[in-house]
Image (tube, rainbow, N blue to C red; front, side, top):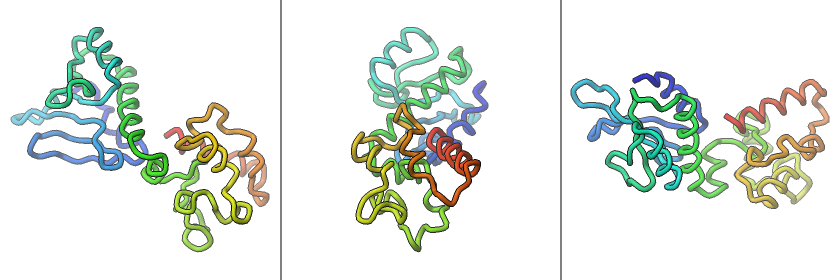
Length: 209
């Protein structure tokens, strides 16, 4: 298979797990327990013969008309799933884009709250379980619906109020203003400007990973 980057690319996505469906000889990639991509292997050689992923029906139809190496999903719903020949002429960048879209389609099938739980991120990109206050002073943003230890008494954090309650987003990655003025206004006063900017960069990277 010429796309030798595929396994690492998919496993580097947040929340992705991998297994082998032995009855089919398929390597499957899941998000939240649902498959979003698969590499179908030949029985005799274990050589990949299809990469299968999910797309919006209209986009799948269009791509099949443009690339002979993209066909209706092999042993899958042929309206929603598409299979790509692993030694064909589909450009690497296009395949990465299609894998990204499949990942987002499956992730988007869950509730917004469940999506944040699967990604193990707060709406602002904080990995709550790595926070020194987690488990003692705070149960984490997703668990307490934004009413974290540093939020105003009885209220959710302003970032949670904006992204989740007001804009109905999964998290701030879906907002064009990332990182916005609310992020600046909720700066931890104990952090230096340099440390805060590093923290913002880390959270943005978490949200975009």
